[in-house]
Image 1 (cartoon, rainbow, N blue to C red):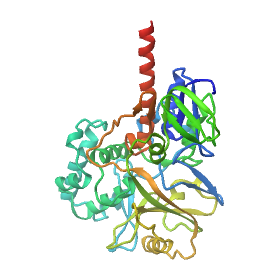
Image 2 (cartoon, rainbow, N blue to C red):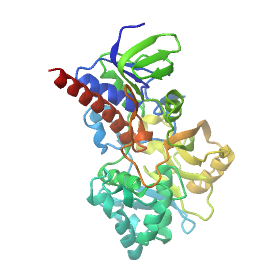
Image 3 (cartoon, helix red, strand yellow):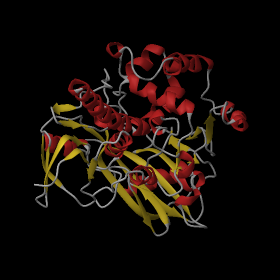
Image 4 (tube, rainbow, N blue to C red):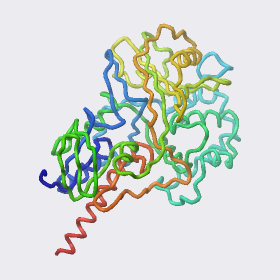
Length: 420
């Protein structure tokens, strides 16, 4: 039996690392166990032929409040996307542009010429988005929450602008049926209005690596946990660890297997990464396809236009995303290449497919009504943390980790006060 430690954190994703950092800051002894060969959980970056490929297309929004206590954003050297969308339409040969006039004033002319900004539609969009801009995104009226489809219908948001908004949000929340909670969608809308998403110079994995580097005790990589219980952990190597608290901060599916507690179902995505010699567009923003029956690609981007560090000199990186529904066969490479040729208006036969990522559980489902404060405790001495217990985002993962730490700190403070 190994010596007791105050807290064992199982899983070195954002939730587990945030929990460990918050506990360490208060002088609590922590061990972090990770089955993989690197920290980050679902956030990983690989170098392939000089290109940086994340595990699925991801971005970091610097407006997330949870980043501030533990993350040095300047050290990440974020490379930002432009605040807008490029749109493939059947009525024009070139890509249309819709951009935020506050942050992209030079694109106002192109935005006005997009043909999507009819006054009635803009009024409806303003009615729908208003709650996201005027209230704290920590939901206060959960019982009034609707699906985003219902709330947009009630706001009267229809026509071409509705199609653009729906397509954009499909890539953010990974569904195209409008089933996601409006409260959650408003939270994301608020964050997009406050910050420009971007990519760290060394890839998305630089975020969890920075969190891990701040720990006094290194994360124990390659340490698979096979059993947990209140105050106890058993590893695949046979080590028995006792603790005051065990925090299971793995992905939702692994957490369910370890704890026996049901977790949120997942939404999947397939991401294709292409190396090209010439960028098919100069836009440093997401591109969405608004043609009739366009195909499976929900968004694409010339990633290296926004984040030059993701491609070697003289080459470019194109990324695309398609929904991967439960029980559905993944999209074929040929389907994606054909649609990208139509979107960008260039031949794609010579594009080099660096990798495809089929990710069945990329985000937890977030239907209405949203429960942003899911109970973390499985039983005394055993709790869970992760974005599947909060909001399906970097923000949600880190908040759940902080909540796990705060719960333990409050309990410990109460015990010490009682002893005193």
